[in-house]
Length: 156
Image 1 (cartoon, rainbow, N blue to C red):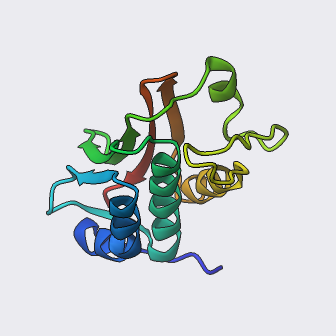
Image 2: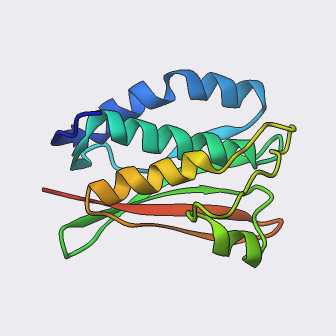
């Protein structure tokens, strides 16, 4: 896959990413709330950023119970970085599971709330793509409360 960073308008990226995901969420009685400001711009590879957002949103939906919510947010830092966060009010993770995320030598393949398959490979791909952009990814979680996956991109 070629790597070409361009300036991306967040709303246009989300229009594409959410095209199929919103209906899927609605059919499972889950909502996706986008709190990222409409004027948000960042530099990234379009295809890789689509994969990152899609994988993280799908994971959040997968581990959120019926009637739950997935929320997208962002925070601009003074150092020229933009932090995106994807949070859910789902089943969360134990500290042990959380500590093995993003590590290829551990299998995190627990089923989703509707028995959906999960291999953990999507998170490894997200990590690889984010690091290729010079960013970082991390997760915070509490069992029965939910999870937040955050990652950085540069503003310019």
